[in-house]
Length: 81
Picture 1 (cartoon, one colour):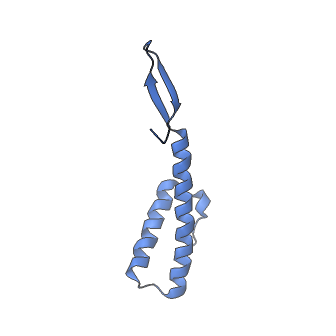
Picture 2 (cartoon, rainbow, N blue to C red; picture 1 turned 90 degrees about the vertical axis):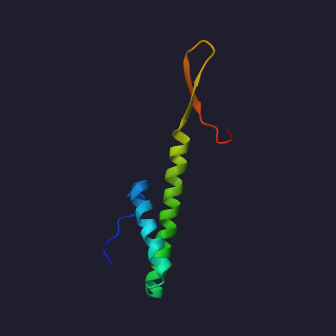
Picture 3 (cartoon, rainbow, N blue to C red; picture 1 turned 180 degrees about the vertical axis):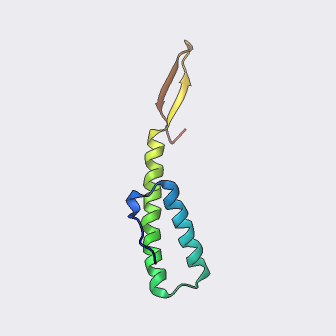
């Protein structure tokens, strides 16, 4: 197995690609048990990393609104909207 980069150094896209690869590999059922367990553990870390990246991105998204006077304003996007 090649040396893996620490999960926290991966971009969202890199982590997602690796996670998808792990899921596909686990679904085949062809990997030995120990390798499957190691892959599952790595997949769990990747999933958490992706969720954190998505939460961080969501917190940065702003809702753009036009005020009555025609000016543009931004405000945090409410997840309940």
